[in-house]
Image (cartoon, rainbow, N blue to C red; front, side, top):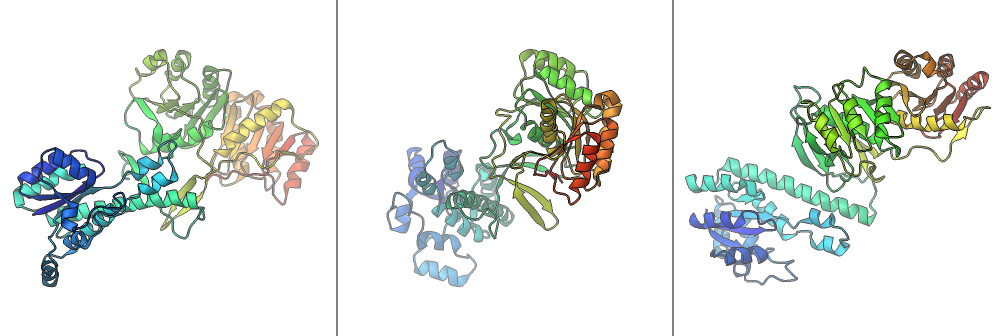
Length: 517
C-alpha cells in the first residue's frame, strides 16, 4: 500500500484519516477542495494535476479523467503485461481510492433549486474512479463510507495491506452506491424530460430507515426503507415520542389507518387492525371522534392502531388510556395528554407534521410478486366524474353526508369490502371476503351486535365494487339500511336498482371502484 487518491464531498473525518495514512507511509494524491483542506491541515499532498500533467479545467468538470489515473487504478498487479505497460508509460499505481460523490440528492431537494444547478451536481469523475477501483478490487481498496476508515487503517497497520475479503466488501458497497446515485439522477431526469411513466426498465431507490426486529412473523427478517425526497406528511417522517421500537406489522397497519385518515378534514379518528379499519368517526372535536370510533368496535380496537388528525388532548388521552393500544399517531399531544399516556409502558406515541398531506398523484404503488413487481398509480381519486342517483328516491342531505363518509372507509377496506355508516360513524365493516354478500352480512352482524339493531336502522352502506346480484340489497333492507353507494357497472345493475326501488332505498353510483387487494 503506497499511494492513495482522496477526493471527497463529505469531508467527515477525512483529515484524521489522511494523517493516519501519512503516518503509515502512504502517499496522498488529492483534488480541488479536498487538496486545500488536507494542505491547510499541514499534510503533504500531491495535487492531481501533478499526476496527470494536465490542469483541472472546465470549472472542475475535468480533473481525474486521465490515463495516469485510470491506468494506475485498473492495472492488475500480477499481470506481467499490465505491469510492463504502466512502467513504459511511466504510470504510478494507485492502491487506494477514497471518494464520495457530489451531493445530488441534497441539491435536488433544495427549495428553489434550478435545473442547471442539479445538472452541475451530477458527478462524473467520482463514479468513474469508484467503478474503476472497485473493478480492480483484488489490488485496490475503494472507500465511500467514513465508517469504513478505521477497519481499513487497522488492516493496513497489521498486515501492510487491506485483505481481499475486505476489498470485496468495499467493492460491493461501491456498486450498490453508484447504482443508487444513478437511479436518483435517472428518476429526476425522467420526470423533467417527460419519459414514459412506465419505461422499459424501471429503477427505484430507497434509503434505509431502520432494521426491524422481525417481519410479519418472528421467523422473517425485515427492514424499513423510505423513498428519497417524498416524505412530507408520510409515514417515513413520523417522530416517536414514547414506547418501544416499531415492528413491521406496526408500520404496515399504521399506513392503512393514516391513508384513510387523510381523506377527512373534520376532526376524525381511524382505528385500524391488520391494515383494515375497525372504527372510524368524525366529531365536533377529537374527543367526540375517538369515543364514537371506539364505540363502533370496542373488541377489535384492543391492541390496534389509532390515528387522529387533531392534537390529542387530556380528555381524549384519558379515554385512550383505558385500553391497550399498540400505537397512537396524531399531529401532536398536549402536555397533559402526554403525561397520561407515557405512563403506559407498551404504547407507542407518534407525531407527524402535515398529517393531512396526501401522496402525490405521480407516486407509485408497488406490490412484490414471485419473480417480479407490480407497479401502478396510487389510488388518489375518490369519486368518478359525477355521482349518479339511479333510484326513484334520492338520498336525503344527511344520507348523502353519511354515504360520502362511508365511501371513504370502504375505499381503504380490503376487497371484497362493505362498510356501513351513520351519523359520521362507522357502524359495521366487512373486509376481505371472497364474495360480497358475506362481507355485507358480516358488516350488518357486526353493527347489530356492537351497536344494536335499532342503530343499524337508518344507516347507509358502501360497497367498494358493484353488486353482481341483488342479494346485498335484500340484506340491507332487512337490516333497515336506507341508502347505498357503489360504483355501478355490473351487467345486472338493474336488478339491484329495481330491488332498491321496491324497498324505497336510495342508491348512488360513483362511477369508480376501489379494489384493495
